[in-house]
Length: 311
Image (cartoon, rainbow, N blue to C red; front, side, top):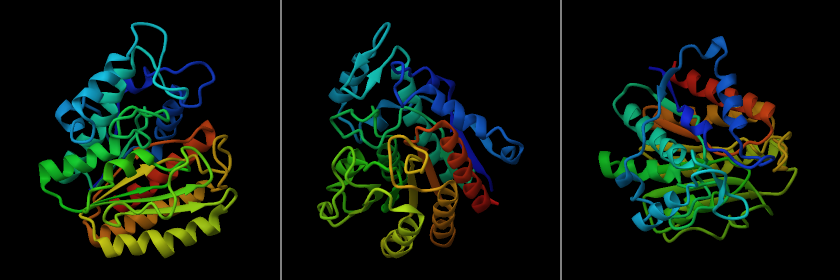
């Protein structure tokens, strides 16, 4: 078995205004890091366009059309103060969602044990009817609903270790008894959601906010004492990861103080859980991470751990 890497050059054509932290250089940094010889064994695949019916399982058709209608012919359009679109943004968003769908298909078919989708725009802030926070469509939520609709997978878990709370995934999962969302994030911080008392309609949301400067020890203890036990209790049939690397100590938008080693460690713990309980089935998608060097190092550590699990 091997680890799948899904990406597409169209994700580089989603341009943002000069100085914007969510820029194409982020993806170039990730893909550059994954060109090292140790990653030669990755199964590299170009992401297809997502079928609209798959996105519609999370976002209403009217919302999808509204987002795509905002793609400008030139220059930039603004979804909100933080979220910009360029002429390439529509295809990039459809490729990003298409990557996680295709990765799920390939993992379910046994072509790979797990997968990392190096794509942008990210997705975890996108609510069912609201694009925001650099995100247009919620890639991970789309993957979860694809698993349910096409493979009749009942229980799906998402672990999100981005420094920001994934309000969009929480909103998409809120009423879903068999979809569990677990988030470790900094609080207070954008978008202001993610309190521990936000539990979902069926107790299916676990928010684990941490204070600025929490650091490696608190993060690792939180994973061991809360994340892994909840996964073991829930017993998912498939694990999705919102892989944001902006809790890194070098990141300009966060302040949790994690290290590159923490990302390899947490991925390794999730891979270990997946190998024991669900035949290793993991699909991970890039979310945040805004210091280019730290992003490259942390994403490499993440993929290295995925590959060790698929060996």
